[in-house]
Length: 136
Image (tube, rainbow, N blue to C red; front, side):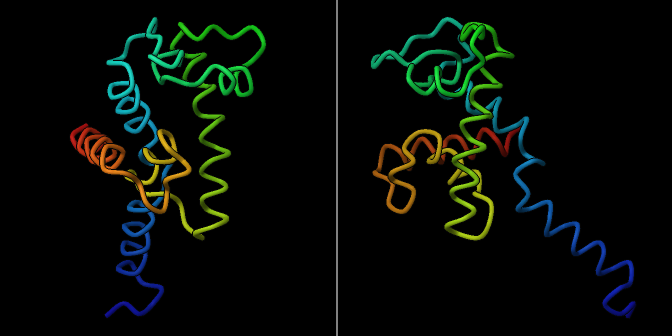
């Protein structure tokens, strides 16, 4: 009725963009990730020595955090986690020519080597992550 450039097509374009754009879910994703990984515990240390509310391996923390960053400070932990995921999401987009879904985002965080075929436990955690993102 309005043609390709009418109000309806703009609405459809915005709707499609909102369904795939990871920035629109960024706050929800980080809150959900913190909840799953540590229950929002800023002092958490994982079984394999992972640190911060996001449970980053120490070598990744050192690579992606500022020199004076404190993994027990939520803002520092978030910045390091976001820097890490910026690289992983960029690699994903180079390979798949689209941004990751929430499910894929979690797999990229937890087990990036399994992005094509996650094992059952990683799939289950990714589904839980998606449920948390959808509920916020």
